[in-house]
Amino acid sequence: MYKIPSYEECVDICNKYPPKTFYEKKKICQGYNFSFFSYRLAEYRHFLESNAFEMKGLTFMHYNGVSKPYLMFNKFWELNQYPEFKYENFKNKPVKKIMVKEDGNLITFIKLPNNQIVSRLKEGFNSSFNRTANKIIAENKKYYDFINWCIENEIVPLFELVGENRIILKYDNNELILLNLRNNLTGEYIDNIPYNMDGITTVKTEDYTFDEIIKLSETLENKEGWVVQFQDDTFLKIKTKWYFEFSDYLLKKYGIRKS
Image (cartoon, rainbow, N blue to C red; front, side, top):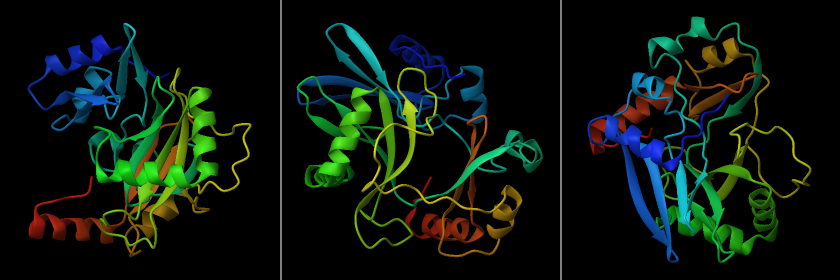
């Protein structure tokens, strides 16, 4: 189901389009070489025609002649963002779960060949968000042990780091909220693992239906929105009207927008 491109295929995708459509950023972490792939100007058609759905934070560690990929979420879109994401195309799809859309930064972790575990964003290792995430796991053994277990079992734990550098919603503390788990070899999303999750904060889920969430998005305030995961493991973002309006305000006043 998931096409995980090789490093060479990622480079080819970048070269296929004008600069900044898709791009590679080369990084060094503790002496080890990495490539981070992401996009800036890519539209849905670019992802579709090149099967480039993993090109949002896909990271390669180059070590001993091997370029090993490390996944994040595959790319997904908002309701009505493109014609392919109209309500009519999703209204009859069975829903697996509806998760609260946390207002932070997507982050995960990697183990270096020297056995150090470090956090990674979609474009690198060295931001203040990385430092905060690394501090959290250094001070919380439950998180460190859980992340280490995931890495040892080729599972990618996908977190939202909230609290640091407030975007729109206010959080009382810096926190890592577990959003989902992926098999790093196949790309499949994992619902259950043989691990005691006590002490790990997981994303909140809703009991509303798909239609009820859409209706709520028109009136609910102080909430970014939701991520709907369907039974076929496709995803769809639904953001509140309130959040869109606040984002437009930030764009007009400061020239920034939360993606």
